[in-house]
Length: 445
Image 1 (cartoon, helix red, strand yellow):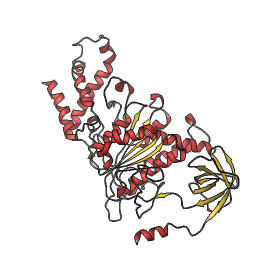
Image 2: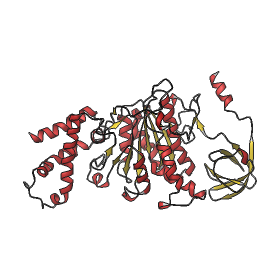
Image 3: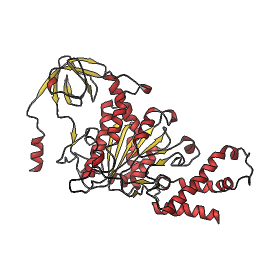
Image 4: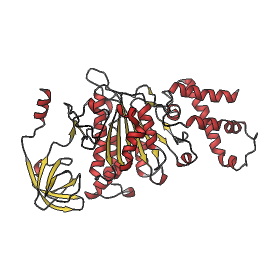
């Protein structure tokens, strides 16, 4: 009965329609029905010999609405009917979605049959919880990756960015986190991924065990910009539903850069002026709206706090430039950043995390005093070696000139081995600190 009531509530008693006035590139101009239109409203455009084309209102020009379609515009003719859906877009997730792969509309694409629909509707573009009405980050979260557990310890409800160029190992690192992190459910958003890599990520990189507790949202690079952007919103909407069910959620998104590129395409088509590197102003207003939806849950009326959404978002840095506009904007929004470097990957150490350039803003508060001492000592040795690396490699440094550098030279091979980790290997926080402490103690002895 509840399902029937929910279905009846979803019915719109008033049908409003318009007509196609013009098609310009990626935009469809519509006339009529403006009193029921708003930015973000959905519409269906009739096509000759094909199913209706779903579109979204992205702006207005004088007396016409500007619609961007979710598919190709072939078959759209002047005067074609447009059916307007003013209520906007929402999704009705359920727990049965775990283990499934869906698209930007919440439709299954894994050939496992239809998805059960939940009772509550979750808007795809819901606002983040108010700052004064959400909890604080919780205790530290075991991610299973040694380099991150020790040098960038993450708390429950924290948001971290993974900054890397193409081919440095972001997707493999995300798969390690999806399989090893101590959480109830993992929501993975593959935004703008290469089509051939989706099945590889799901079947090989993520694996059967990783998929059991995951919901994967996919929008490949060949799909329209609206679908790529909506896939990011869908990822956060599903994560919010799981959070409200009392589950601890890990949200992984690859990548925020492709979300920004999709928003840039939409903004330019709607007539926005380009700014830095062609990115439109709405890109930099949409980024915090998306990323702030992750984090500690809102405080309920009874004083308890909803479960956290711990977020890890990858940023594809353009030309390995970690100061490009999107990377710079995202770094200022999130609670820390993990820097992956091509030079480290080229010498065969994976994950290729540069721990000296990576930071977690919840450290050192989430570590014990003795753990902070261990991390500080390891960082000093890594920094001393990095400062003299060129001289050491060409043989210009003379052993005995500086005791701290001599110690760093002896420790570096063991520290490199500690930070390297096979994709099927998992190490707890306690075991990681114990192993690092043993490395430092053995060298001292």
